[in-house]
Length: 125
Image (cartoon, rainbow, N blue to C red):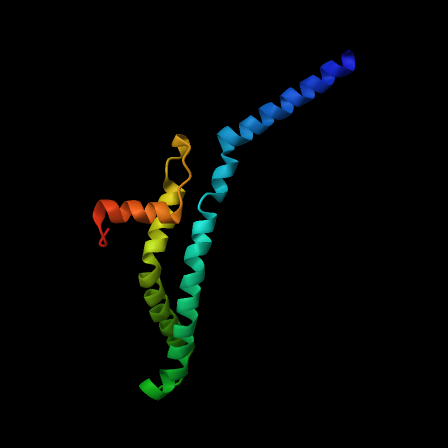
């Protein structure tokens, strides 16, 4: 009987530890928004890198100046700005998912967030 009591105490300790991790450290909240981040990051990269390469390859013939670290940075900034402007709706959805109140127990998706924004504020939302 002494052995069963020790096993019971170990189980209770483990369950209390799991509850502590879940409640106080919110370990599950670390991964909230991971899929929406990937969903935003992939189109961003597919847009940014080809534009960046195009701008770099045409820099010298267009500006009559050699390609330097500064000009490569400028090309990257322009390409990043274009990609960011196109993928902004996905970034808004990702941010809302990450910052959403999780006490209601409902899991938000990119589609549901964007649908709610469109329903409430229209295209400009």
